[in-house]
Image 1 (cartoon, rainbow, N blue to C red):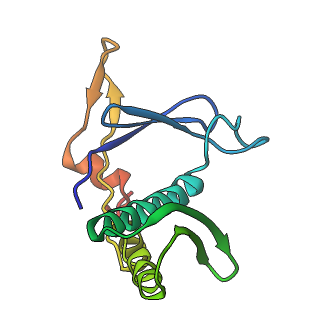
Image 2: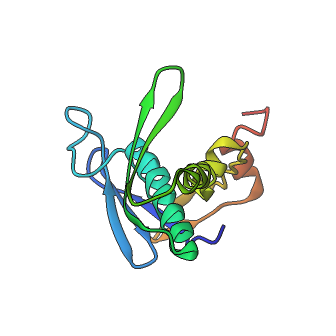
Amino acid sequence: MNARDVTVVEGERHARSITAGPHTMTADEPQPIGSDTGPTPVEFLLAALGSCTSMALRTYADRHGWPLDRIEVTVRFAAHHQIVKDVRLSGDLEPTQIERLLTVAGRCPVQRLLTRQASIVTVPTVLGMTHKGRPRIGGDTHDVAEWSGQNEDV
């Protein structure tokens, strides 16, 4: 999976400015927790799954020259920690083409990432200020170990 780095910078309250390559988005929480200036992080996750599914379907149908006129994917959380994808396809498709497209819908890269065990590594960087008021980046290894809870003496 080829992806650009995504950077998230804190804004007011719970708002976050997100940059991915040349694109800028805002994430937030609804009121009263946040200011509702953008989708929630969970909504971004669902949007990633829905858009990836739609793109995979379009790519597959176009590659095979199938008459797929429109794709609409609605994604939501359901009970028991399930994510439900409603996939609506429009076009003069044969039953075997529909069956194949629904198989493809379950294999988009984001869905595979979510359904397989993904490893997430947190790399801490502690920013501080020097005595002259300029940012100091990092610290020695001991500082990072203490901050991350890896040092039992803390």
